[in-house]
Image 1: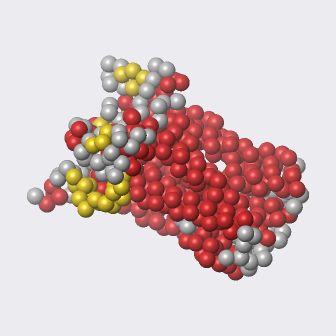
Image 2 (image 1 turned 30 degrees about the horizontal axis):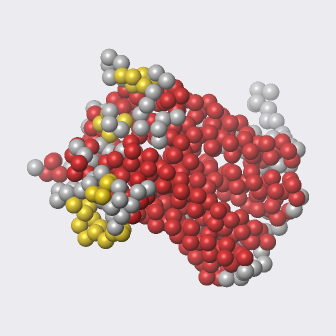
Image 3 (image 1 turned 180 degrees about the vertical axis):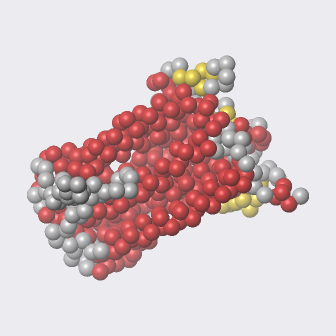
Length: 474
């Protein structure tokens, strides 16, 4: 009897992948936007020759180096889980997903790896324009990486351009249809914009933190000003992109949207439920508080339109955790609205010439620092938990994708991952906060080039210019 209460190998495998991908996604969500921010800072420095841009660039370059490395390390184990925990999924989807992930390595990862060293340590060793090219290529590499990863994920959400062979494997038939599947353009635009806003919230929080200490610090002013421009201009755009993405999802994955909205009955003038608790057993959302007709308006763009509810969809296609999808969606949207509010307030005070003079705005920005990371995590939960019970939506179930592996083995590896991730990545995050707390100053030093960087293996290469050591036999 007690054995029936323990989680199954399937549940543990899902928990393990969710744990590692949540940790991993925090860092690309930050570095995608930060790489582009660094490119913009260096472009302004080249155009104006003002030291404030170079100082700010060097300040954030150190942070980028740490966050980028943590993103690479935290993502490595995910590829192994495809083979250990999800071998059936890997076998059946390899003809489609294998090339997509391979293209990400051949284009984005090689581009980042090839020019990252020049970006981090080459400012005093190569020309200004060549260094700016390296920064731009690293920024472009992060976007290319997002392109391929989101194309693969979107294909799992809205599979297209394939056929099933005799063994049940997904075989590409039209690569254009595979890559640019129906949900990919919306997901790519929405996710990349979310990454930019995530970076803006962190940069704005750091700038505001230092403005609270020294209102005259020009580098803190620059950080805060640029971040608030991003919030004021891009956060409303993200609302529009989210609406378009939601309409696409409603067309292709109606059960996910019904779970997001908490709709069980298909009704005209469907309400937007602000609060409630979806109960799959009772087939209703309890304690709901909503706005009549609003969901019909933003899902179908017709106030009187009928919106499909879960009760009109097959029960075995419902997301397996309705409250999780429902509340994660509200966390994401709520934080997005707060970002719009922050951007609007900053724009109002900027027009009054008081952007740097109001401590309450700076405290608001500091409080919003982690909001982007929380919002993208909530968005990932909506996307992935809402796709359940499928790995390839409508075609391959999660229960049929797992490896024939014993639950104790998965539990042991999950426990090991938890210990290592909390220890190593926790220390890395602590160090990032240490860097955030350092005030930006004139002639900001960049990453140290005095010692070699260990990117692989256990033995660092000898430092450039070091005296050669003779072998004892010599």
